[in-house]
Amino acid sequence: MLKKKSMKALLLACMLLMMAVMAAACGGGDKGSSQPSSGQAEAGKEAAAGGEKKVLKVGTDAAYPPFEKMGPDSKPVGFDMDIIKAIAEVNGWEVQIEHAGWDPLFEDIEKGKRDIAISTITIDEKRKKKYDFSDPYFDAHQLIMVPESANVTKIEDIKDMRVGVQSGTTGAALAEKILGKGNTKLRGFDDMPSAVEELYAKRVDAVVGDNGVLNDFLKNSGKAGYKVVKDPNVVPEQYGIMVKKGNKELLDEINKGLKTIKENGKYDEIFRQYFGEEKK
Picture 1 (cartoon, rainbow, N blue to C red):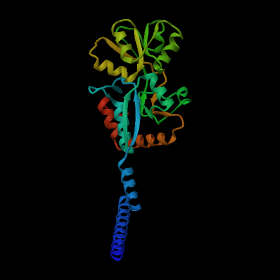
Picture 2 (tube, helix red, strand yellow):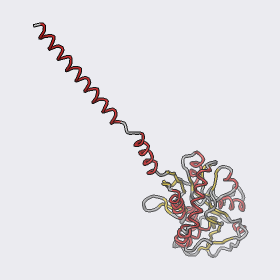
Picture 3 (cartoon, helix red, strand yellow):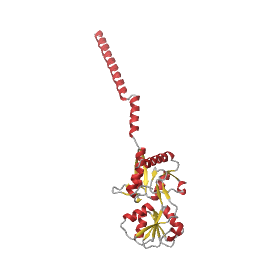
Picture 4 (cartoon, helix red, strand yellow):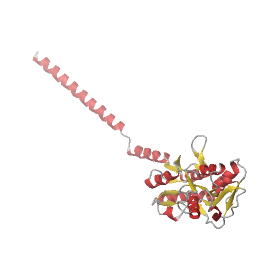
C-alpha cells in the first residue's frame, strides 16, 4: 500500500515538472516573437522618415488680389499662394496656408505661431530689424488711384485730398509723409478693398497702394472713370517672403526654392497667369 502511494506521488511530480518545463519554453518563445530584430526596427524607422514631409504653417492677408484673396472653398488663392506652393514642391514640403490678417501676420511670425508669411510684404530696413526676408520675388511701386478727371501727376498732388490707404503698409507711410502725421484727411483701412470702395463711394479722393493690386482693381472691378498714376520719383519696392528673425535654415531653403523656380520657368508661368506677361 505504501509503495503504490510512493510511485503515484513520484509519477505526479514528474508530470508536474514536465508541464512546468513546457510552459517555460512556450513563454520564452512568445517573448522572442513579440520583439522585432534590430534590422526590422531600423527599416521601420527609415520607412516612416522617408514617408513624412516637413509641414510648414504659412500665413497671409487674403485681401490683396491678385496676390491673395479667399477662394470659393474659403482658402487663400492668388499669385503669392502659387509661388509658395511652387517653392514647397521644390523642397518637398507640405504647406498649410491660412488667412491671418495684416497686423496679426507679423505678430504670428514674431511669436513663432507661423513659419512663413507671404503677403506682398515690402522689404524695408525697419522690418528687417525684426524679421528675416528671402531674396526679392516681386518688384513693386506705389500708385495713386483717382477719378479720371483728377489733376494728379505726382505724389505731392494728393496733399490736400482725402486719401485712403491700408493701415500699416508702405503706401500708408508714403501718404502720411505727404499729408503729415495725424492729418484727419488720411484714412486708414484694414484692407485695400475697403479703401478702394471708399473711393468709388466718393468718401475719399484718392487711394495710394501697390501697383499690382490697384491695377487689378482697375482691370477687374467693372468700375469705369478711374485711373492710376505712377510718380517716377517714388522709390521702387520689392516683396520678400518673411520668417522669424534668425531662422537661417528655413530662409536658405526658401531662397533655394525661389532660385529654382526662376531658373526652371515655373515663376514665369505663374507670373503670366496673373499679370499676362513675363516678369521683365
